[in-house]
Image (cartoon, rainbow, N blue to C red; front, side, top):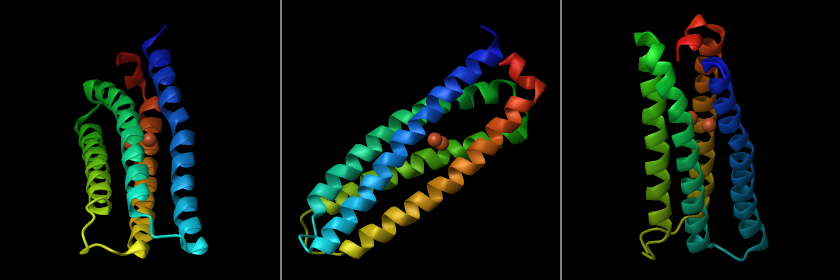
Length: 152
Ligand SMILES: [Fe+2]
Ligand SMILES: [Fe+2]
């Protein structure tokens, strides 16, 4: 199998996970709405567990993507390397943010009691992740079109 075929295979494996991630995001949103509309909330502890599970799924996905990043860095120019580093930093930021959110919801402290905040937090995170994915796709597609892929 050529370098290019291996890279494409790893890429499609990583991209398949986006379907799972979208499902988890939709479930998080549905849970928030159901709890709000049915008036059986807030359910901070359950949301904390869900965010923790989401963090673990994302963490595994990011590791797969970062294997592709390494290949781009090995043969890419300094601009590609800078873009890859930004994406890697964002991965770390998303994961840390989810850990913080999950802990915050699970603290059982009276200082935190705002179900609406969770909605805004999830929305903001999803918007930031969408921008991240767009940049990642642009970088990967640019790399796929270049002759550098044959060297990775
Ligand atoms: Fe990513
Ligand atoms: Fe991704």
